[in-house]
Image (cartoon, rainbow, N blue to C red; front, side):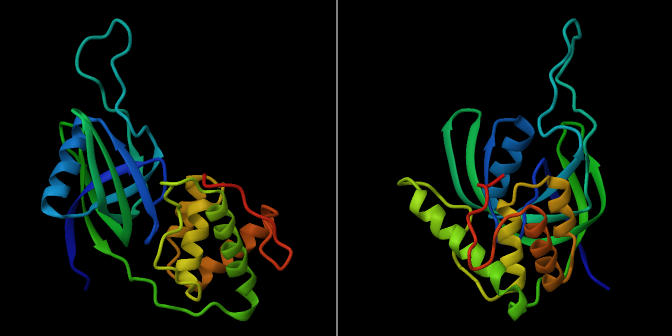
Length: 228
């Protein structure tokens, strides 16, 4: 039986995959406190994708008194741990952080505290087992390699590309996750991919999606649209 753990949650209208780069601009008090505590303790937090509700609490409507209200936030149960890799505080009340996606987890229960921060009890999902890219999916790897070369050629000094080392071109899970980072599809579809446990099946689904979106990944492939 797997052990469970408590973690602070950061609901977003995006999906974080293991190994992904996530930039955040933090200005809400509930998240300023969260990020400051995680930075000080060197601890991760959980990113979950919203199925409804807003990332930012809503101010009172005209004519209404009181504190800003929290909208009804509903999020998916499968999320990803976020580890802070860089932290800046350019001015009071503002933090700029970059995170790297860690392990996937499944929420067993969650609770919203009175100041608006969410916490939850979760269990880790199995990490992706390294699976070599099969011959019939090599074109998916080639397509992403060409896309990365295009990004590198177009990048300006100081740009941080969405695909970062270590580059694991012969690993199904890593390859599928990097495509999911940049494909121009809805967060809800990306969430479905995140919840797939088999890295090979995830890559096969990505390959089917590339065909559906008419994004080339074969020998004569062009480049895919930029990150969503």
